[in-house]
Image (cartoon, rainbow, N blue to C red; front, top):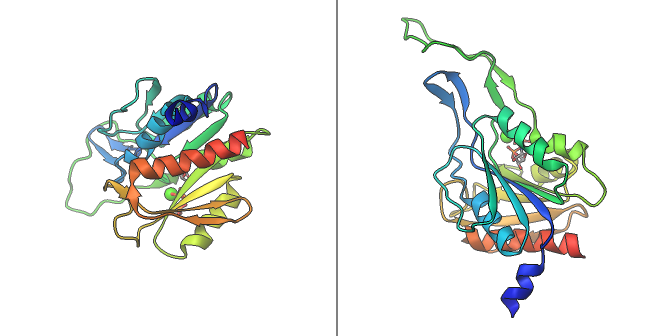
Amino acid sequence: EAESKKKLRLAGHKILVTAGPTYEAIDPVRFIGNHSSGKMGFAIADELALMGADVTLVTGPTAQISKQQNIKRVNVISAAQMLEACLTAYGDAKACIMSAAVADYTPADVATQKIKKKDDDLSIELKKTTDILKTLGEAKREGQILVGFALETNDEEMNAITKLQKKNLDFIVLNSLNDAGAGFAGDTNKITIIDRELKKTTFELKSKEAVARDICNKVAQLING
Ligand code: CTP
Ligand code: CA
């Protein structure tokens, strides 16, 4: 009975989740990427689906596979493609949980041919990508819930609060790279949630599935009151 009750909590709500890294092409065979595994975002999408939500999962390149069936998966490669996919899904999304590790910079020009090795060193000019979360925050409608992540190595809480406010979020999930067992590749995570009232909740080190439950419960609380 507890299970069926839980299942109903997000029924009828469209929720957008982003996951994984982005790859920014340098030439036809090379890219700039990062070590995001996509595990956290996929666990969140699975948990939301279990809670009855209508989930769209926009994901960068990853080996992850959803455990739940009823998830609409949109595969993208670059930050620019992820932005497009998110803008498409944002219109009727009740909530967005942005766990992707989006590239902040992308090569200013993509070489059409493989860049050949020369005797000299090589510099690649990079230009800023669009901040997807900030863009969604600026377009946020009454009642829409926006959740971001912050991966920090120093001044963690201050940096996370700055992101929360700059991007107009309802809460931010802080991952400290200083915590053993937390971060990109592993199966566990240790998070602190900071909300708009700057209320901080620090959770124990737990599996990414259990962390996903904590995050999704907070989203359900905000939606259902
Ligand atoms: N994010 C995004 N689009 C970007 C960069 C980040 O949507 N181009 C989102 C991430 O998915 C995450 C949040 O913004 O939910 C914070 O990402 P993070 O990299 O921690 O922060 P930045 O604002 O990019 O700042 P910095 O990397 O300098 O810490
Ligand atoms: Ca960043």
